[in-house]
Image: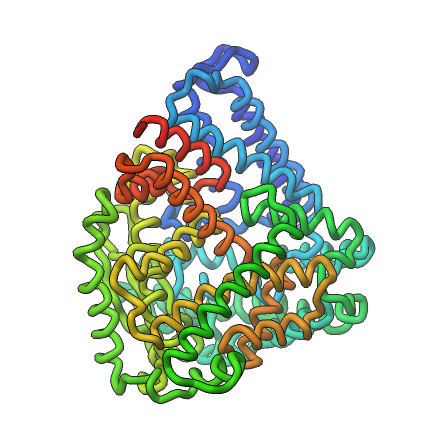
Amino acid sequence: MKNILSKSIIALSLALSLLSCKKTDSPLTKITPTNLDSIAANYYEQYLKLYPLEATSQGDTRYNDQLAINIDKDFISGEIAFYNSVQKQLDQVDYKNLSDDNKVVYNVLDYTLKDKIEAYAYHPEYIPFTQFSGLPLTFPLFGSGEGSQPFNTEKDYADWLKRMEKFPEWMETAQENFREGISNKIVLPKKLVIKMIPQMKAEEITSPDMEKNIFYGPIRKFPKDFTEAQKNKYTTLYKDAIIKKIIPAYTQMGKFLETEYFPKARETDGYNSLPKGDDIYRYYVKSWTTTNSSPEEINKVGLQQVAMLREEMEKVKQQVGFTGTLEEFISFVKTDPKAMPYKTSKEVLGAFNGILTKITPKLETMFSVTPTTKFEIRQTEKFREASASAEYIQGTPDGKRPGIFYVPLPDPSKFNVTSGMESLFLHEAIPGHHYQVSLQQENTKLPKFMRFGWLGAYGEGWAHYCETLGPEFGLYTDPYQKMGYLSDQMLRAVRLVVDTGLHTGKMTREEAIQYFLNNISYDEGGATAEVERYMAMPGQALGYKIGALRIRELRDKYQKQLGSKFSLAAFHDEVLSQGCLPLDVLNRKMELWAKKVK
């Protein structure tokens, strides 16, 4: 395939270029501690060149015309060589003489490099995408004109055209990788492949009618200053690229999945059925939780959490006078009119603003350092409201765009508070993702790989921990809001049981769906989608609860150890002061903090 070798050479040359640091005479010269900054800066600069879509997502427009074929074998070899070269530089740093903050930087970079290198030992490229994630699903969002790819200038339009032209090469490589997966018996379950086929054939991706095709979005919304000549030029070029490049690439992939891959896909549900599947799953558990906890230990924690939360739900059931079983109560609250008190969008948004007003005085006692990034609550736009979830979209580091908490309200009269209204706000908005992400982005002392980095066990763990602050904020006094909080906690506890159950062979997909429905008030479609997400991304769903429990554990430990010297605000400030950290790095950081407080 053309250009593959050249990509490999580029990646290898990046690796080699990093081996010679500007401030040293040779790669073997001892690197002084101050050079940790340049190692970290160089690492991220080169990483963005390897992953240009990530640069685009962060608002870095330098590589907006590039699409890396990052699932290709030669590319991966170059990428691993690059990570090894940075690791060699890091090994030269005098760790003992680093400041405490720089030790954290070192630890995070060291963890990141080792984790990325180890991942490739298990050949993730054999499954280049799933029904839940991967380039074929994100590429239309970039090209829709509504995503992070900008369409403001003629250069922007030319940049995206180059990415569209490269896309078929990525899809061809994906097919080759799927075939190699078949040869090595590392394949997806049939139950997931059957969901991927219609995704590849979706009308908004494969329709030759440009008014229906999502990739035609930028042509429907030209910038106001475009001339007729510019409009005509890009209308022709985009139609041509969509008809000749995009539609055939998706159509061929759909056909490949249906006729060649599906018959060879597996009947089993968990990774335990794959060659070395137990080792692969243990790696994913370690990577997603950033701990050394085993699947068996996590399963046990999950069962304990589910049992504890069921007891708490029983208390709410008695409080509202419901006489049936807990399963019947979980089902009942989905339709109980008392759980749906609102008539209009304005009332729901007003209630969310009311939560913010209620918690604001307490925020001052729980946090000394707060973000400068502004915050807004908005209703999700109509065009995506029907299928959207409540979410937090981070603001920009320069403060030009606020952090926004989006709430979809297709029918406000059906907005159910037992879906976790108060806990949802604490998780997605304040002090959850808004505080954590904004403080991280605003901290210009951090190297960029940490300012813009994300580790789910920490990031989602922090937001999930924030839900537990509800009683301290004066929330969850209404039984339905309390049930919503418990349901949010239960979702993350159930994930520990189901994810580990599926991938160690303790549970089938069907058993996992039933277990889900017995404990959480989802309908069967929602429960199925959740379970299939865990099948597609083993270990990903474990980070929320594991991270939250770790932060709570650290808080309880130091509250007890420090006694009157313990300040909750100081504890929270320290947890958030350096962005997303592996949980074991967070442990070391908080231990040093506690020694200083003593």
